[in-house]
Structures are given as structure tokens and as C-alpha cells.
Image 1 (spheres, one colour):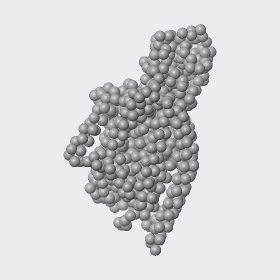
Image 2 (cartoon, helix red, strand yellow):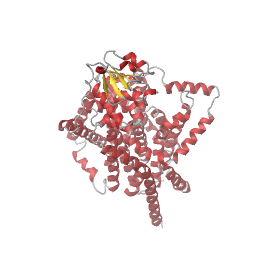
Image 3 (tube, one colour):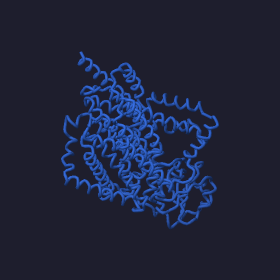
Length: 636
């Protein structure tokens, strides 16, 4: 009787997951198709051109390449005001990225353009010969180069045309050094990460080790580079990349010689029916697709080039001083993603935007670890389908393609919680102590990735500690220090050192003081708080944002409540950590509602859907884990 029930449950879950995947695909396939076709039709273009094209248009991309050719790299570029241009061309942070490493200055009104004419090494963008910088330039043809009838550049006669020469992508030398070498180097890094993860967590499934190893190596590279830059031991990121890669190879060779690992473990990834199955192949194919879309479209979403990409370019060009002089500075942004972007930019250039590989690899790594975690619980079919629901959520796949830090943050949060779950479950007894430490290291990397990472980690660690007390696992409370020590060190180190270059009154930090002041006066913004909650609930059922996941949550939560007496208490690790993640983000937006610059609706529309990504994925992974039929009876 039980076997029949289990089989029926299996088919019901399969049907549910397939329906959710199909609904998600309805919303993501058109986006994938349009970007894919746009990439295929422009395979002969460089990374910067792709970024500009997908950010705005082919005409804008051609103009950017024209400016990079005409203006020398040490030139000063004067931008037009937005009233005679468009936001992308008139925004200083945007053009810092597209025209890197040139110095960028803004004009806030039409008249200021004439002030810069004739200044040494200064180039003024032309927005119509009679508009900006004004009729004063008419007749001075020797100082003018036009891209089309409207857009051009005014500069010193002997300086025009001395910029970056165009790249011939059909050249074998360019293909070898700017395309194949970066790809080979990235594959080498991923392989090194896999071997490192195999040394510290040998009991995990091979594909899970591959995903965890990627996160470990990227984290080690960015923190090490930051320390080397801060201490003044290196001056540029290419030296950092070469140094760390050399050390990594030496450590790997030493591990191979001492039999800590063997070259043969690479074959563990391809044992059919054990580690490799059709679901793993589908996950890897989906990851490969988004690698193509991410690299092919460059940095084209606004925050990717006005914030993360701009700061990455600044780090590559100026070192740590580039953090504050480049990109937006509304808050103290941690440097994990900018350092990785700058390191790959400095090492490999932008012919192939290899720095965009960072993001789809976090996406693929997240899927690999989640699938391995679920497969330890149940059959490959259910684990694979449950993972593919996650893999096709519209917000998640969008962030696999764009260059934002939210997906890396989510990766570190979710994997940190999964490793904590496995540590308290004692399913990997030989690795249990290491699991505690690595779980803390992943949570520490969340702090190092985005500003809200610290709040999320504090909430998650509080939720984990609460579960240990409530579930009677008192004996494991003493292990909490293993989880907390690395996050504490990373947060303290960042808090102390960031004041060296993040100076002045930042928007978010300044708003916090106003928030406390208003609360003390009894102004609680109840209406704004209710608006945030309504927005959150409405977002769950916005198919264009989260696909069918809201519907899936509703169905599985109903099933969960109907069978609450059968639940494994460890499910509450995921429920509590996801709830704490939602609470932290809602609290953050509640604090932002006191901001005088923007209304709360502006903040919500600008990023709330991606800010709740960690909580959404934790909730989904936890519910799927509970719904899957365990391979062995759960000990009570």
C-alpha cells in the first residue's frame, strides 16, 4: 500500500515540476531567443561593442568604437548634458566603463561645453554641430571628426585618431591570445577549484565539488587580490592573477605528489548512472547556453556597467583609488565582483568579455550543488526536475546573463545554508567539522559580495542558532563558532579598511541616520511598510518576474501543511533561513522608505525582485527537499 502511495506521489511531483518548468519556459524563451539571435548576427564584434549594442543600440555601439579609436587612452572626455543627448551618453559612470581608461567629465548645461574647447588633451563630444558644444565649433573642421550627421568629437588636431585601434577578430594571433587563452585559463581555474574542493570535502558528489570549488576559488582570488592591493604589495590586477594562479598550480602539484588528490578524479564527473545522468547533462547544457548569452551580450544592464563593471575597470586602471572615482557610490559596495571583473579585464582585455563568464558560472555552480544535494535525498529524476524549476525562474536566468552581484550573493547564501544543513545532519561524518568551516566561509563571501550580505548573514546565523536550540541539538551549538569566525573576520576587515577609499556621506548610510531620527519622532511609515508587504506578495505571482514559482509555493505549502505530522524537523533550517532573508530585505526597504531622494516605489521597482532571490531559492530548495521521498527512512 505504501509503495503505491509513494509511486503516486512521485508521479504527482513529476507532473507538478514539469508544469512549472513549462510555464517558466514560456516567459524566458523569447528573451533567450532575442539575445541569442542578436549575438549570432554580430559574432565579429568585440566585448565593448556588444555591451554598448545590447545596452542601447548598434548605432550607439558604433559611436563608442568610433570614440575609442579617435580619442587616446590618456585623453579627457567631456560629455554632453542629458537635455541634448540620452542618459547612457551623458552619464559619467556609464561612459567611464565604455571609454575606459579615459578620464570622463560631465557637462550639466549646454553652455559649459564651450569652456572645455581647446583645453589640453580634452575631447568634447558633439551632439549636432549647432547644439552641443555650440555653433562656436563651426568652421573648425581640422578639430572635428564626425561619426554620423549628429554625433562626433571635437579635440586637438594632432590627437584625433590616436586612440585604440580596431581589433581584427579574424586574425589568428588575436583569436589565440584574446579568445582561446582566456577560455583555457578559465577552464584551468575551474579545474583547480574542483581539485581544491575534492581535498577539503571528498565525501560530496563530484559535480557538487565542481560547483563548490568554483565559489571557493573565486572567493580566494578576490580576497587575496584585495589584501595585496591594500598592502601595496602589487600595483595591478594582472600581477595578482598571475601570482595566485601560479600559487594555485604549485599547491595542486604538491597535492598530486602527496596523493591528497589524483588526476583520475576528473573521471568521477563522467560515471554514467552514478554522477552523470540526463538531468545533469540538461543542467550543464542550460549553463552552457547562459555562458554563451552572457559573454555574447557583454555588460549591458545598467548596474553592470555603471556600478560593478565601472568599478572593475577602475580597479584595473587605477588600483583601489578607482573604487571611489569610478561607478556609482550610493553605499559601501564590497569588492568581490569588481575585483574579479577588473582582474579578468586587466589580464585578458575586452576582445572576448571573459569577465562575464563569472556570472553564468555562478548560475551553473548553484544548480550543480543544489542538484547534488537533492539527489542525495531522492531519485535523479525528481532531483533533476526540482533543480530545473529553479534553473528556469525568470529572475534567476536573467541574472545568469547580466553582470549584477545578486546571483553570486545568492550562490554563497544558499550553498552556505546547504553546507550548514549537511553539517548538522551528520550525513557526511568524515567531513562534518570541515562542513561547519566551509559553510561559514561561504556566508563570509556573501558579506564580501553585496552591502546587504552582512544583514542576511546575521539573520541566517540567528535562524540557524534558533533551530539548534528549538530542535534539541544543543550538543552542536558549540560548533557555531566554526561557522561564525570567518564571517566575523571578513566583516571586520572590510569595515576597518573600506574607510580608506569610501569617504564622505553616502546616500544609504546617510539615510540610516534619518531613519533612526524619524522613528524617535514617532514617524513609523505604516503606509509604506504595508506597501512593501503588498509589493512582495504581488511579486510572488508575477509570472514575468518569478515564473510559476509562486503557484508552486502555494501548492506545495498546502501539501506541507496537510502532512505536517510527517515532516522532518530539519526542514525548518530552510524555512527559518528563508524567512529571515525575506525579513532582512523587507526591513532594508522599510528603512529606505525614509529616504528623501526617492519614494519607496522607486526603490521597490529598481531591485526588490532580485534582492529577495536568496530567500526565494532557500525556500524552494527546502520545500523540494521535504517533498522528495527519502532513499532511506528518516531517523526520528
